[in-house]
Length: 222
Ligand code: IYR
Image (cartoon, rainbow, N blue to C red; front, side):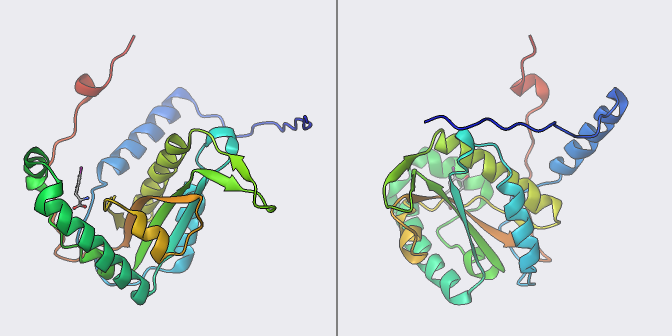
């Protein structure tokens, strides 16, 4: 079965070389300010903002444009508490035996432990699910492609959109994450991919001193 191809002109305003450099530098400066923040203010964030950043994330490219993701946005205190409880149960095990000594040593500068108060304090949690396959209306399976790559790119778009809106987040990966499928009652084709608390930083929020690699250490030009 072949479907008719449909194309429309690509329209985006042309920049000069000078404008491109200016835009690139401004964006770089903004992205440079982004940090993973672990202390959140309880100040609410309008649902309209969350809807907008999710639409931005879903504008990401994906294999065969299948958009193999679901974004679950949680503001219910009851659901957040359930998530915190289940996540901390797993993290307790991680920090008490499941993580290697080397891993714990690598994390020591971040001051993380099994306690995850941000899962209740942040006004929103966004849980990204990847769709291993899609379900047709008749219940049959439809293939998705490059699912990890696609959802990873969408997560990057989401993080950038959150930062652009003056909010902060943190990529939290409780492991294993299958409790999220249960708590949020997701269908069997969806697997939890990433959990991001979203909100304003707490007034006394602190971030670790970090240096980012310079171009010489992470790029090669040919
Ligand atoms: N998921 C755990 C541990 C953790 C792992 C890495 I790699 C980090 O960069 C940070 C934390 C936790 O969230 O505490």
